[in-house]
Length: 173
Length: 111
Image 1: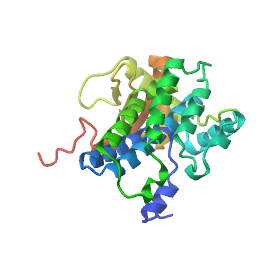
Image 2: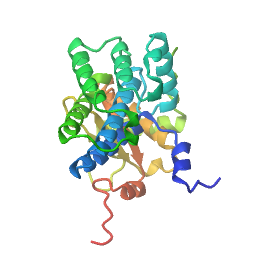
Image 3: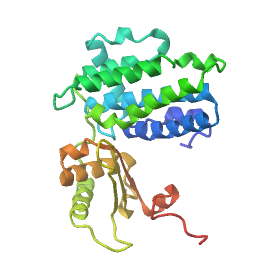
Image 4: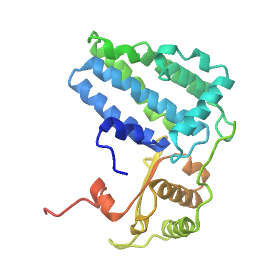
């Protein structure tokens, strides 16, 4: 079988592992920083939001016991079942189509790690505060918007995404 | 619903590689051409660990199997509390490491 020449087909055929999420988040964060430095603020915020989503999903998957080599699609199905069991799935806003940052944060702090340890109250509060700050300024629907964002808004989102990045191991272990 | 952990029972070839890798991790050889060449990037503190292993023996081994061997070897040497901090574990052949531009494997054909 020959490899597809179309990028979209190559992306769809690729089955990412959990460790691909770590690498992808780093790459998208670089992209977002490049946009921020170029004063392309809405584009930067749009990408920062997805970086947060990737880090949160990665943390949920790891908290469910996934190794870096686990297939993300398989773990996603487990996460969805877990969210359904916990009564969280119905809170995922329809239009966010799996991208709801607060949904992933809530799932994260509802899950004990494989050793049974839950996130501490301080970690939960900080996570809530930073995800709230991002979510107040980000939505997947931003792609249809003209740029009305300010540097302050972009830097606020950046700072909260950086917090999630710095603390991701503490969130998943 | 239980977590589906795949490939946790390594095939004999992979078990042999794991054993060799554990030995190298515990008693690293010196010399520029010594293999496997292990890169253990641990910034410490709350940061995640990244592992890269350059080894000619990866040639016919699938990427996921390479990563599983590396994770198993690392866990055997450093323990469960350390392996939980690993975010990325990747195996390269020397040629792949040069293509990737891994530190120490940069293409020096022009210089």
